[in-house]
Image (cartoon, rainbow, N blue to C red; front, side, top):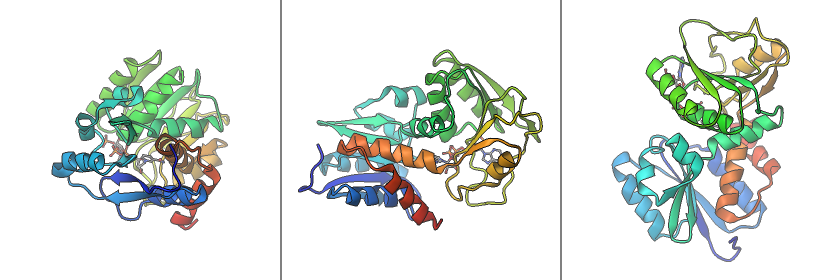
Length: 282
Ligand code: NDP
């Protein structure tokens, strides 16, 4: 239950913890909604993760986010998993329910909510660049949302194949792998193209090696990269006539989902987006 008299605490466990947009965004929303809560960023070494989660229980934390490198290891330390976290094999959010700590995953849900602002993922043919944590979360939620087909394009073939196998085991989606060698020619029938790699992160000039020449103007192109959000990938897609979606919507929506799970309050997403933009100096 939300409380205005008690100081509740959420936490972000992981590395690096300095300069985190999520903390800035969540703290602004606490203030906006009159909640005397705190969101801390706490750097935790892998060997100390179990103690940190025990500390979370002992100190009555209402939950927290879990980031690299703890998203998989923390599974053994919570009491149970949500359906999405179990399917993905990764937790990015912990929620206290009574005396239990529940492992959730909000990354993919945040992306889907953002995507729904420009298109319905149902029956869409998707090309997903990357097979890391963000791609797994997005891929599973796309499958659950009824995407027709997902082509995973990844540099490391084994990792890509693991994601394809996971997707084919979840829902009716048909997933296939394309090994990423040189320029990937995006197939003409693609309706949604997602960059879920870290290419472009802190590097506005970074170019993603894909060819968009065959794609129709109705294509939706999304990027998960938050900093900077106006990536070269999105600029090139826009020049091809595509509808583009930056990574800010995903971070705001995943933050809003966690906020509601922890506090019971539906946060004002405009305030949260403005906070992320302020943090990034936009
Ligand atoms: P991971 O390290 O788990 O995965 C990185 C992925 O990028 C892998 O598939 C990797 O391929 C690929 N990759 C990296 N460099 C290259 C390259 N030069 N060429 C081809 N492929 C490359 O990272 P995450 O999945 O955790 O994060 C990915 C991005 O998503 C980051 O920018 C992160 O900030 C962002 N993110 C955004 C969120 C949001 O709310 N907007 C939420 C979560 C993440 P390979 O397997 O071959 O190494």
